[in-house]
Amino acid sequence: MNVYKSQYELIQRTRESLFRYCETLSPADYVTEVEALGGASIRSLHAHVADCYRVWLGNRALGKSLPKVKPESIGNVEKMREVFKTIDALVYEFLNDYKDKWEPSNQASGQNDSVEASELWLFTHTITHEFHHRGQIVKMGRMLGYPPPKMNLAKA
Image 1: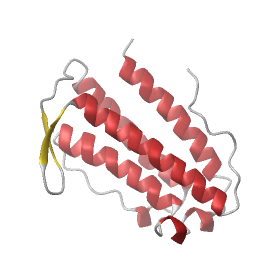
Image 2: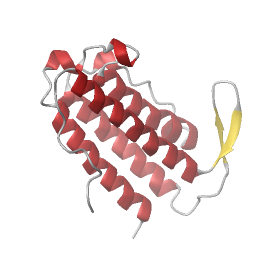
Image 3: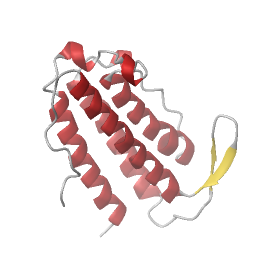
Image 4: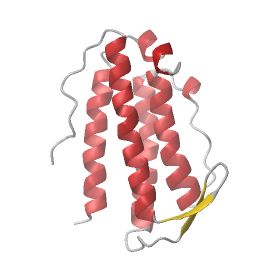
């Protein structure tokens, strides 16, 4: 059993529950900027999460040159699901490439610095980042008048 793939499958199932919740929002509310949370929209946070996977796993770990995920090009939840299908493929490529190489060997440069980051760190960073923004998305939905269902991590 590959524990990282199993963990990512839990993340995918949990993400699906968030997508189902977002489908209860009106299309206009999905893209509404919420000033109380920095002017972001639920759509822009979803795109930001996808872009984090692209940058850290695709560009930095795998050395790919992948285009930025632009929220304005994603009109609804169904299209965002399509974006995450490409992210899923990227994550599985990363997990396959690094299945036996979890040592700190990846030079990950940030905005003003460069740090040596292990593939484990890169994977952990991207998934914790997703859950951070998941909480913000649910809070924004609540602020827009959509009480969320119980939003726990999916069970194995």
